[in-house]
Image (cartoon, rainbow, N blue to C red):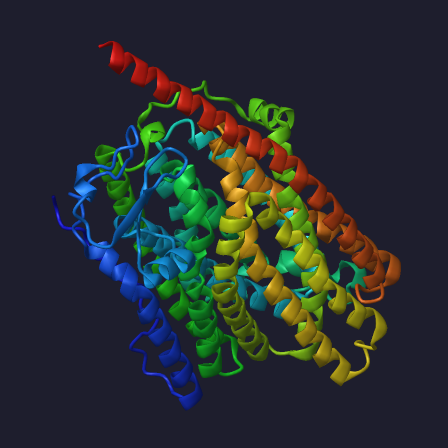
Length: 585
């Protein structure tokens, strides 16, 4: 057995000779303390040399001999007929199992996956705050609706084609690196080449331009900002949905996923707190000029690059852990069976495959519904934020603090999400997101519809903070419940459906949802003059989307439970046949 390598968390501080403030130092010190406390347990799990731990199973209702002498052993509990978990008899053990249902031998893989998700979300939060600052402060909040339809959606379609093609030529390990590396390379290129030379790369805006064409023309003139926005939007879908969850679905069986998936984001959701405060810190230290913003951009890109390097190292280490668990039989009998290979499908066949499967269609509706609903509320809110914070520095500071609030709220809510799925089941967990999002949006729409936010500064600031609370809680619920339950639904599918169906749903469907919301808002702006005047129509579309979302959850829940029961029945039958063969011998 070779000792496990220590995986160190990303350092978010740099030795920069910059002015300091007590408030910023206090915030960074608090974040560092939280991060170290959260990392203490995973570090212990990662450096343990537990390769010799036996597989804990229950055969013929007999307790394995290796468990007979363990202290405080109360019972060996069977879970789905696969690998068994050891439960102690003390009150603290029961409390730990309720709040953190991960056994010691599972910690290296669990915390490695959590750190991997941390790096992905840290990168996304940093570039998300940066892209919003670049585009909204330069082109206006209304330009986002054009960019999502005519920039992000075509890019998502091209990525789906690219990913579908390269998945036929690369192994799963190589596919991870080929997919992730171009994103990191682009952020380096933007920080040190495109942004410093924007003066001669961007053509000047035409004079006396009709106001109706101002937003799309501004996006074209500031094309590098638009490109940064598009790439960052893609990373939000590709990084979490394709890179992380596809790996998780491949190496984690269902009986572990029920406990792991709701908790994966717990460590990872310190990332928005750290990333948001990093962005706000550099914005505080900069002056009003664009050159200072460029310097802060380069500092944050250094951290993005370091996070990318850690991401690749963690992926390699997780592969080692998974191979070890396979050899030791820790993943259960089903994981040891070779999976049947299906013939590769082309792009047209992939679309047909997606359309013809009702199960995947329900999943697609879930993803489209979330993208549509969050976009309908978010653009109105960002437009108000732009009116309240008119310069780039103040806007960036606000968005950095907003990201930190999202991370902190998710960090707390995810504990409740874990217990909802664990104790109430998949259906209740999947329904919680649309029900709570609909309830949280009601006071925000009421405030926009019945107060004068366009002319009253106090009303505008109140609406900004009401919308901030709605967006923070909606995204926290999404990370804590929507993502885990959605990813659990992929587990019963065959490998072909997981790879190509997931890429189509999580990348293209998410963009269709957000772009659909942008199209709706474009139409409302044309009819009503601005998005605030048409808030009533936005609210109506929002709640129709909620109704379709809830209907799809019920349909998917029936099929999900049927697939799980079918797989369990087949596994029990195979185990019975194997037992009969052993008796005959």
